[in-house]
Amino acid sequence: MKLLLCLLLPAAISAAAAEERTFFAFDDINLAWQHNLKLTLVPATKHPDNPVLRRGPPGAPDHGHAVLYGTVLKTGDTFRMWYLGMVEKEMKAGQAPGWWRPMLYAESKDGVHWTKPDLGLVEFNGSKENNICLIEGEVFSMTRVNDFLSVLHEPDEPDPAKRYKCAFIAHMPVEDVKGGRSKIGPNEKRWGAFVTATSADGLKWKCVGDRPVNAGGERFEVSGLYRFGDFYYATGQLLSPWSWRTDGGDVGRVTLAYRSPDFVQWSQAKAFALARAGQLAEPPVKGQQGHMGAGIWNRGNVLVGLNGMWQDAGQPPPKGKNWNYGVHIDLGLVISHDGVHFREPVPGFKIIPRGNEGEWDDIAILQGHAFMNEGEQTMIWYSHWDTGGQLKNMDIGLATLRRDGFGYLSPKIEDNDAHFITSPFVAEKIALNVDGVSQESPLSLQLLDHLDHPLEGFTATLTESGVHQVVRWQKPLPKDKRVALRANFPENSSARVYAIYLDD
Image (cartoon, rainbow, N blue to C red; front, side, top):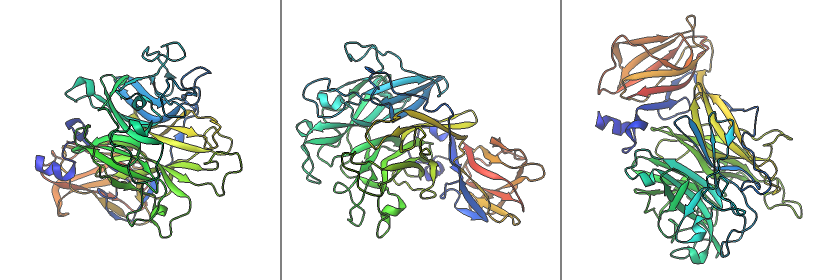
């Protein structure tokens, strides 16, 4: 059993994460074998109360903006959000120039209505009655968050003080960078440093080490943090001259990944993790980039997430306008099976599009690490970015889908039968997320051995739709034996299969 699971799962995924594996409809590795089927991706529905978390009043730490350069998790019955505010003035002398974007915290019971609790941790405008998280470190500029932050919760971590982990960008003076700056790229006066910290409660943080973890390497705009297999991974963006295509050619914003076995020592080498299809074409599609890596949802056997689909403005900005005036960003779907390499199942498809002209999120939208299955729906939080530099409507919104309903498989030619065969697996229970089945239009299921031979006595029929329809077999599934699932669609079937769930 252990050897077999190693073939299907990264080596060090926790027992909790491995209890259920998900084969999504857009998983072209585990659902590679298909006959007469097509994939239809489904755009998310934006919540009617958007934005669900707005920036604060004058004098609040999020008056400049409230942006989900951050994370949403759920512990117990409470949704917990870490996001970035914006403050115009410096708090202390000696910091790198620019705005201060503090790590802020909010809570909710339903994911729609949020409160900003007074944490009493950081003095701001003469008071500690605010929702600013405390970050401590030996070099002050390390604790001054400037950009993306990603929070990871590991309740099984042996050290209680490290059960929450985070990564963020601090734009630091070069003299604060241990080892100096890299020779790659221009000689900047300040550095986009990749900083990590740990916490017992997610509110009071201590930086890991006395300098940024990517010291001695290139600048790095980190945006993601997750554990997959034996390593922690930090993903984020760079562009030329700090990054390049695998053939050495210049490239716009692409996703890179660094790794660490212990959250302390990080690789100097990096992996080229994701580029949009047009960026790798020859010649590249003009103005196409991928913004800030990917917002990640770790589903144990697979990572799914959102990538910012950046498109340059069609012409240079008018005089006096912001440098990225006219840039538009929608959010596209990505998937990874190894924690390193990501791809778009349907390049260019907008799972969450920016709003129509005049709507609150009509310019550019930003992904966070903010996914949750709640009841029969998937909740995804995101935020708006005014690339014109006027901080218009820079708040946080919510979009929803049918639970795990990013997309579905259905017959392409209606008056013909269809089927798919999964990759081999070991499981104790199988369930399907399916719609459009009935007594008149059932979905017939069959177990196969690893060589595609039918297993005697393992047939079943699904006649009811639902997000988690358990398959009832005539006898228990074979223990410690690799099997595959074949799902058969009859002619003129209206069935839609969104996902397959495997319980270990």
